[in-house]
Image (cartoon, rainbow, N blue to C red):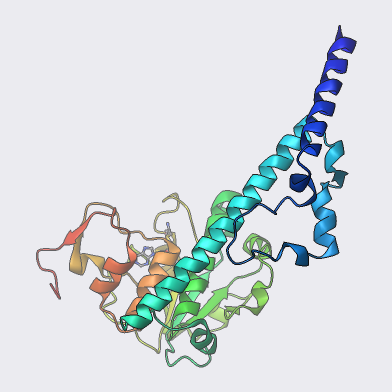
Length: 311
Ligand SMILES: C[S@@+](CC[C@H](N)C(=O)[O-])C[C@H]1O[C@@H](n2cnc3c(N)ncnc32)[C@H](O)[C@@H]1O
């Protein structure tokens, strides 16, 4: 009985192979029927490597694929097709957006070329922000990954600014470093990476640990201070840890002044990248109120406080 089943399976897979052979253009040139306005007529220019890849799937000739492999192969073709279409659509969308902006005198912000020149070294902003990565041992892998993801966002935001802040990452030596190493070329990013603690890099009197537990509202940023953000994702498991650290180390501490402007139902503990982005917007000249509105998601229920400044 099993032999009969095997035989049936074999016949079925051979049939599938023949099915595919009935559609030679799909096999020899799997991308030929993708509608891509930018690459029409270019199929013939494909390199020998690409042609070879088109007749093989995972190193197996298309005509010799099993039923299961064929299924995978077709899924791959479908995915490639939609990927190319999506990219072409996105390119067209950006092109018409730029055209529209030019026509209507709309400022689309700095170009990539301009941003390339806006490095921390060239930036007029000398406000320093440190991400303190000394909490690796308190996090599970998933949360460690979230810290690094937030740092990637921070880096992107800083690179997109015409006046980036002076960004440091300290205690960069443990699991967080290993996690960061998954991102090729990170060493060349415009960030000051240090394996030492911030205490070994900056004068103590300049340090201000940012923590929601502090009673000191920071009403303006000083170019002379070094603001530290705890590189910790803990779902409130270590409440008050950064505040305690600041007290133990005898350094300054401060919190973002959200209660000056808004009444919030929830706790005022923000993510690492939210804190950074609020500081960045303020250092660019926005008010704290405006920065909170820009950075915090709308679903966070913040309402103007009765005695709100600026309102
Ligand atoms: C997700 S929080 C970590 C909370 C952690 N339980 C603690 O004790 O700080 C990440 C970091 O963002 C900063 N932060 C979050 N909310 C803040 C606020 N309201 N004011 C100032 N800094 C804040 C702190 O530096 C904090 O370490």
